[in-house]
Image (cartoon, rainbow, N blue to C red; front, side, top):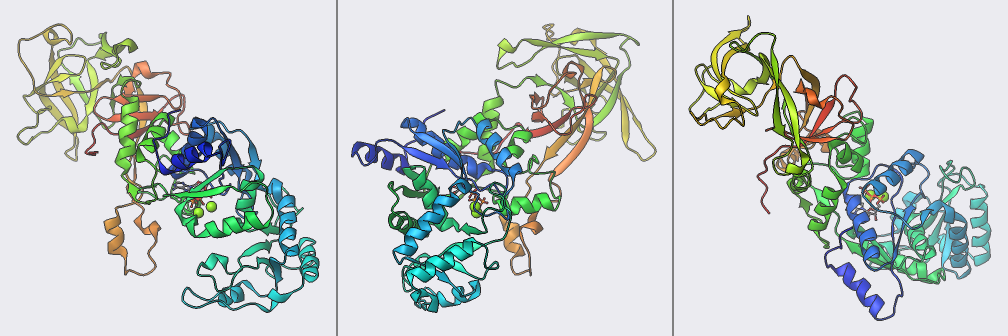
Length: 554
Ligand code: ATP
Ligand code: MG
Ligand code: MG
């Protein structure tokens, strides 16, 4: 994998190694298995694995599974698959839930030091007592409990003597701290819920703010990279590690989240789209999930290149999705075979081509990469072209087919439109053209020129195919501003009702044995991926990854 560009996290690591503060770099990627990974996670993955790699360090994949209500084995499996697919290998594979016993012991260390107490107040009361930014909090009556009483009550919590919400364990820090996180945060809560890993062993579960620093410290993580929303939690992170007597003190470092335009990037929102069947599963090609991008046809190379170019900063700005599209075009330019498809077919009869005859035409597979060789394309008396390549009454500068006009069929001959047939509703359903055998592609014909080149497939020897064209899942933010003021509008109101268009057409017959995830460039239509979910032997389904042209400027 490519080096990470120089950035402030890398600088900290370099300095720590030089000064002898650390003698190796250990990082971790710590997803909560409560959903599928998205491209924002890919940024965290690339950073954690990339940086450790550069310093010959180690990176753990750790499932932060401390909330039994939302977590699931399906997510664990999907996350592992996605990390591997992105091209990264973890050193240790861990589950935070494997540390529950140790976390419990560390909570007891705090209680014994008089730094934690069992709270009787309800969550709402705790919130009320906490105060505000301008007003100090109020100390709870439970705060003065003796160490012995706290130890006994905490044990009873563990033994299931209390209902959910009846008690919590809190840190005893400072109810007047300017940092709200330090006003006696909750460390443990009661939840009588079966956990996907530990079953019914536990009915108390550590809160993220307590669990995460311990998980890092237990694994000997040196640099704990997270996103900027945790900046305010850093003092608590340090407090937990120091006061629980952990031998290693990891350093938390925050960077800005990756956001993309015209999409949503939080597992909660993605899950809502999946659960309400707005999309076709977590791997819907419109989603910015890793599995969605894979199914759409993005490659790990393009995603890594994109992430590398977005850099590392403290800012949270949204990156234009066109930048991601730029990198997939770059990656596929030389790799993807070029071929032809007709996605909105219009039949053309070439009236002077002998009936019952056909021929094979040769074409380069990728003119930018001649090593890919050539392919054979059947041609006969009947072909399909795109509906949009014929107009009965064209405007000026329309150089495709219209009555009396001649165009070049890519890789074949010039054809001239002589006549057309309409159905009862007035739609053009068939063209009658003539071809000129002299003009065969590759023959060196220079007798006359035509202005338009169009693509086609043979009507008698082609393969039916489905094409799925995508547009942004979420409409532009300007529309969101218009929505403001309107009551109860959410991101769901911004979902683009036209984000998917499904079309039935044809591809060249030489594409008979395409496999899931194969990628092609269809002449004029862009790059497509063979959909792994809906493709059948009879009919491949092609997801458009991206069209050919972009207006994006760096
Ligand atoms: P979300 O808020 O999207 O549901 P999360 O932060 O809750 O994501 P976790 O599973 O807790 O998801 O995240 C695992 C790691 O990925 C964390 O270290 C988190 O900071 C990082 N991460 C999550 N989203 C992004 C993002 N958009 N950009 C960069 N890193 C991210
Ligand atoms: Mg989370
Ligand atoms: Mg989150």
